[in-house]
Image (cartoon, rainbow, N blue to C red; front, side, top):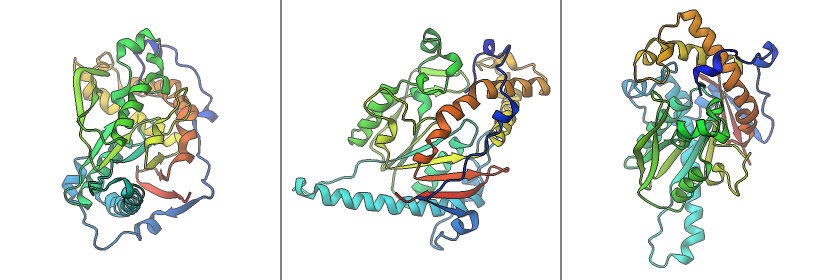
Length: 332
């Protein structure tokens, strides 16, 4: 997340040693696959989406590649589908005695997707949604991001939280938990507030409707977070969880590249919250982006996001070119 410009005048210095963090290698109960080992798990019968349909799902600085679908997403979809089938069968067994009318219907299968700012969560979640929906015709797959549960800008300002936007305390956690509980309870007609990245705020009176999908992908920075005073956490409602991982130096590089591209495009619009950055030179834009990363996003990653990595069912580790190089699967 990006803070208002007032926070950028004198960014807190973070020593270079703290700015480059290599995540420790995961130990058992994780089983670790390299890319070629994982790609070999794909079935010849898997249907490959068209290149055009995949590429249109890419982000500002995070392309969606067909090779990534073939080697990463198709095996991942097979893995998730096997878990879904097992979960549905278990539910039928457990609830058969209470369903004399034979009207059992599984509640939405919820997949949490976590990771840092700029690691590529949004693109990953969009591609996963497309591949999961195509794997079984007629299956509905919805995607909800935690952005809609951020407090509106006015409330963040009142709470002195604008400089912590994206941190756990900047979200309306009770509303988020209420939504997830309603999803898992099988309720229909649910509404999620719409967030505008251009306005950098919740859009008043606009909502996304969620109506009992077969699968719900719930994507956000802190979805695996356990630092919480409430009786429940978001991941209590997940059936499956994925963490996108990379060295912090790479994520910083991607964040800066994205900021520079946005400064040349979206920030040029008067409607953009960051329109005041429109006249920065490239060097100035890089300096501002690096300050934001070191002052806001790196501390959030180190303190709140990275510590949740070991709670994910699957950890996908990215390399230099945004491609996934290592897949770690937790067995318990």
